[in-house]
Length: 115
Length: 112
Image (cartoon, rainbow over all chains, first blue to last red; front, side):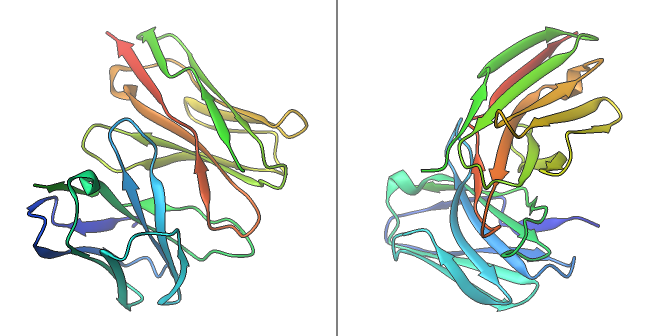
């Protein structure tokens, strides 16, 4: 099973709202990722968690706050977003990362619209 | 910085024909090259990958070739079918093993 699940599929939020995106995998992977994808562009890396610890933050604004409650779950908390943050948010996982490159498996994404 | 160039940006083929997508990477330390297929409204799906110690890999109708000297790698799809229509991304991962550098994508149309 190489499935990564994400909820919700779609989310519409106002600029003053607080919402969260959720991601789950049961493949025993120890690395999890958040990506942002704008229309007709490739995914852009936002965060990397390894063994439930934040390893990489690609200079993402603080209105995006990641959290990894356990090795299977990854959340992205959203607060005071801007309309330009509207995008497809993708979660991915891999067996590990660091000394070698591992296959990354992506979830279906959450389509976020900020009004 | 690290960069992956992908061509063409759009490719239209007749069902049954072959399709070839080419990528060039800049970081000579890159050692893993995955290919992703993304259908409308879905996340990228890993379809094939190749590591730097291999020159070619094949999986049914899909093959990938790697030329490390020239820093080129290519995706070959034979006997294309309408369900192959999607956006294809090449990518390269180098030292550190965490950051995937994606190409800009190729939109493939397979006409029935």
